[in-house]
Length: 392
Image 1 (cartoon, rainbow, N blue to C red):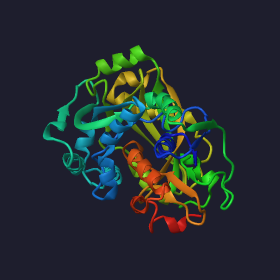
Image 2 (tube, rainbow, N blue to C red):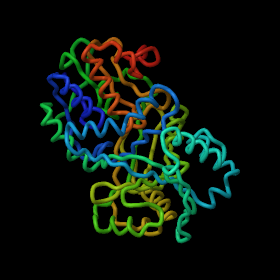
Image 3 (cartoon, rainbow, N blue to C red):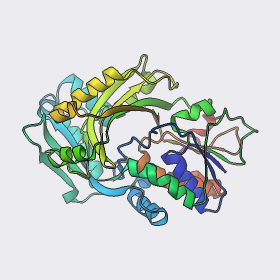
């Protein structure tokens, strides 16, 4: 079996297949940072809306612990998610701009409704002591924080550990690029296309809802400075992830099908990354399904730093490098996981909007389906009527 793409989805699929005795080759393009390597690594295991994917997401903590038992440390740790908002946002909860942002992000029309929705999702799985509203420091533009029990994968540690885990599992890892795939002439008996933003270049006939954004973060490699920032922060703790209560990225992704011109947003947050930190998140989406060239960085970085400065003035001038990577997502519906119609032997594993919560369980299901277990095929979200007719 050939797995194309050595990010989170491809690597976990290759491990799951190898554990079932398959001979697996993993094709790794090996070009700088990947979407996996620059991710916050958040595991929102309690945040799925009721349905089959919610059940799969809820298994994520146990799935990551089991993966580490079999393959060694991969960066998993329990943590808290701290969602921040300001007095200005609270006071402006009835303003049209805030209502539009909240509605796009959470399907809610006010700050109170957004808080209630997030807390109700969390309380299905979390105890009372894991859902807590906090006051922040008056020195910051942030005045309120919602702390939630959470989990994270240190994406820096994961990027270093996965190649070793794959080698120990017997996966043959090869660096290189793949050309356009053709039905009836696949390079292996079974091929899993898990190349993220590169999937459409290899198989153009994919559903239009598989889209690409350019995601940007500030990467701070300075360990002592990172520890100083975390230890003196009034907003977060050293192992926690900080994000805005009303994040704009999800809303932009949901509007992707309606875009007539490129749009971009920034969200102010941070997450540990090895000894350093990842700061903020920018997202740029263009109309259509093409990835396009990397956007110019100056305006994105400037606005991202300004947003970070509003939660902690030190972050606006921090000596960090702005990095951008293309990221695949589905603008609507479930991720695309299953066989590609019209191309026997070709499977797709892409468009996961909560990859660190969904990828472990979906990789296991995909490996079971590839091994010929029909019940696993029925449980794959992209394997039945919703997605398959548009493939191939």
